[in-house]
Image (tube, rainbow, N blue to C red; front, side, top):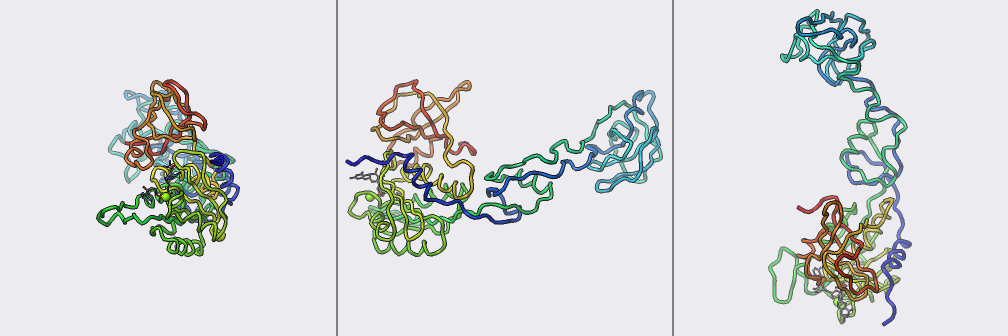
Length: 418
Ligand SMILES: Nc1nc2c(c(=O)[nH]1)N[C@H]1C(S)=C(S)[C@@H](COP(=O)(O)OP(=O)(O)OC[C@H]3O[C@@H](n4cnc5c(N)ncnc54)[C@H](O)[C@@H]3O)O[C@H]1N2
Ligand code: MOO
Ligand SMILES: [Mg+2]
């Protein structure tokens, strides 16, 4: 058997053939999960001005030094500061200004007394404004204030280029008065599953048939990582039907074609032949398990990745090869899954190919341990749903004992499993 391509070599061939996409300016309300094309550095402080964190009275704290319930300090109210106004007056010794939460601190004042600490009490502030306020306890300079720049000062880098925007990020951009962001275009990916045995999940099972799982499995992985799935469907193991579907997809301005199944050595596995005739088959077969029959090349001018048909193989190959390509296209700073070290809770075996075993990762007292999630057949999707990690056995390693240290890819670390 000719030597199989290593996983890392196959990854680098794919990544070399994939370009980072162009960028576009979009409104922040559509920017959830999009990747920034440029770093964002704020030119504003947040909060932009020192403001009150309570409904109460802006004062000079020194005036309240001797306040007590037996002997309250009486201050003259000189004005009112609703949120959204800009006080033109100054608070001097012996004076107070009524102030609402979020309103700017007037000049002269250095603290706010909460209304509950005054004779107005929890009935709260209302019109008309009293002429005086009695304060029952001392406060310190800075009390009940949110100083300018407390959260963020001008010149801070908020996000690097490539950062994927999350809801708090979008809120922050809005609060800084940034209504639009330059982001990378979303990769447009077409998915074609192949197989005479496939049925739409809405159809009842028939003898010899199975429901198409891969289209849905792959589409959801890719969408979760920012791709737009422009086409998704399946055709039979029919050379003409596969070629025509790929032609239609490739002509529609997509960035990447993904096929599922029909890529091994079966009599009705046509995908490699079609890629070879309609473009270029750059490589076929990788030294990994599952996922050996992976194909990569170009169909017309569109990069195409032919994933093996077994659902777990398709899933693993999608994480190991398609996601890095998707990440590069979308402008991500890092392209590969993050791995961690863990100790084996049981012995594991493989056949010498680089293996990605479905596994359960658990933390005990700060240390990571890993065990198999169950049966490792690459058709078994249920076991995959019970896994939270892929346990990696390097190539040439056929077995490892309990306690050995391995690399593990946590699956869906951002969502967890519950
Ligand atoms: N003689 C050999 N046979 C096989 C080899 C080999 O090296 N020599 N490799 C095996 C490996 S490994 C894999 S993986 C599969 C890959 O096969 P294909 O990519 O050609 O896919 P198919 O043969 O069409 O299907 C394989 C398997 O997957 C099921 N399948 C296909 N599509 C879907 C779908 N959309 N949803 C759910 N399940 C799907 C299909 O029914 C088959 O059971 O080849 C091995 N054989
Ligand atoms: O790779 Mo196949 O992918 O072992 O089932
Ligand atoms: Mg086959």
